Image (cartoon, rainbow, N blue to C red; front, side, top):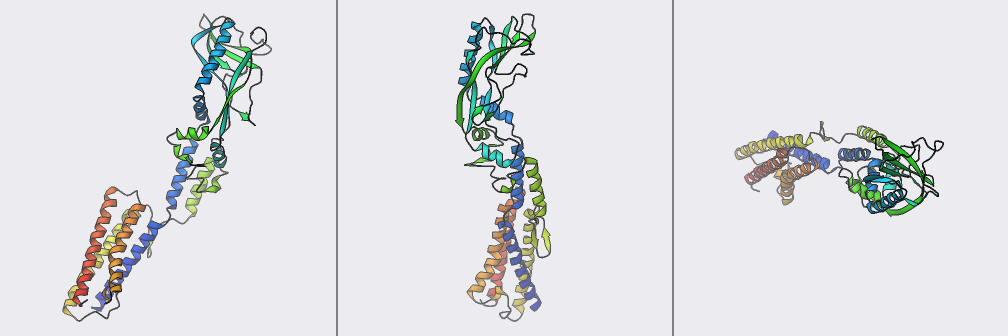
Length: 382
């Protein structure tokens, strides 16, 4: 009898310890998940491209570019140039740099601020006859008869005609004034040539807005990087020490921190359960413990029917007062159920079958154990 009572008490105490350990584990901050979210966000930041940002900016002032296109085409036609109806037209744009790909802190500081974009604007053509640059000024071929198929406004004669993107202290830089107008001309014999013409232009229309934030919101993988007035909520706002780091350095830092920290595993007595498997191993251990506890309770009930009372044995399940009964039932029913539900919420990576079936199993076994304890208390006239 005494040995059976002792076994029941030990199993009950062990059940309380296991449930408490599971509850503490489930309620503790999930540092591993925090590191994973930060690494995922930084990896998405690495995907950002300044060229994509510029393309987004180019899509904004469409009407302005259309007006500029009309002005330049009319200027060329007045000078006798034949311009194709579908001529392509490139206007240089200046924009604040966002430090994309640079340190996380600098990028966030710039992207949440207002940015200014400025488009080049032709004020007048070059004084005197519109002429090609001579050989001392340009390496491009002279203008020949043909159809203008592409216009690049503001590109230098010795530069591949691409837009420049700089804005220093609010003033566009990168193009001299007056600059050149580069024309791509298709001659009658089919040859495509580039010719440079002198044009005078100044900075034109400027627009100010939160272009960086608006651009990120258009990208599915980057839309979450902006949260209110903050930036990179899962990485920089959680780990501010990443501010001065490049993406690669930040990822290496997070990896080292993850390894340096003690793994957030579940430890039951001398048994350590890896956090990656705790979602299904903890319910198994808890379920087996309840099964053994129920088995010992049933065996004890049969012994009590044939022998003396066990009222004097120091186990809370047999205490005569209401407080003892409440403690016994809460630790046998409430704690296992609570620990399993918290664990199911914390570990969302287990299969749906385990996630939904394990709580049902624990509820059933806990109620069964409570019924067995009530049967014991009735036998000894409680």
